[in-house]
Length: 136
Image 1 (cartoon, rainbow, N blue to C red):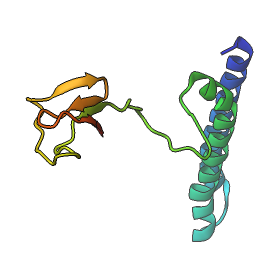
Image 2: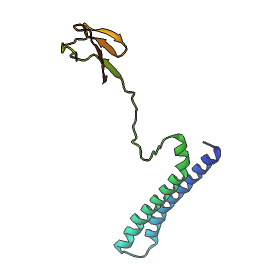
Image 3: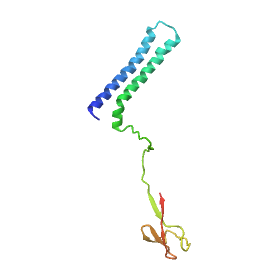
Image 4: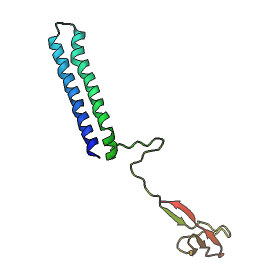
């Protein structure tokens, strides 16, 4: 993050805080200076003016921080993609078939002979069988 963008972010944060604090104190001061006992006016000065100033101040602060937050990597928006926290690699294992496709005999993993990286030999008829890929 450059010093210039850091300075702009700091300045907009200070301006946003001034808007928030000024709106809160200004609303309450208007309440005391007003010569009215109308409940609507009182609620406007005590609730609405401070709330609007808080929203405007927070908007100014977030507007100033938009570049610095993106550069720090705190917010990542990727449109049209599913966001995942951790991507895991898939693991696979190759298993021999349970039955021989030629003679129909049951094949166990103990009594087989591997004839290649992905093929086994039937111990009964000698046929070469492809292994089955299974995700772990």
